[in-house]
Amino acid sequence: MAGVYKLEIQESTEELKQLLRAQTMATGKERLQVLYLLQTKQAKTVQAAARLIGRNRVTVQDWLQQLAASQRC
Image 1 (cartoon, one colour):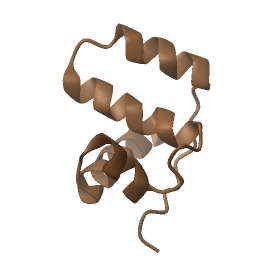
Image 2: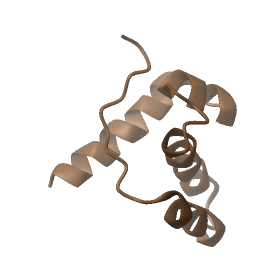
Image 3: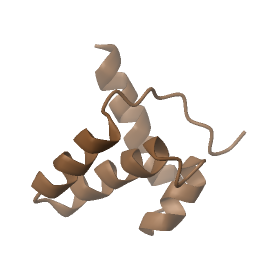
Image 4: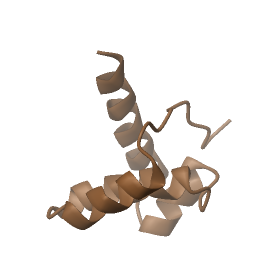
């Protein structure tokens, strides 16, 4: 099913807000925004999160896969 992700977001909503405020690079902000949207349930799917930030679903899925791979190590 498209848009279903299997990533456990470890940061709390408040931690993600703080990280967003501290982030200076646009790409970092976008990636944190996706996590924030998914964590707060403002976006229920990857496709919805991608639409909200103006990125392609595949791009956002790639970001999440990279994050999941880094968490496994």
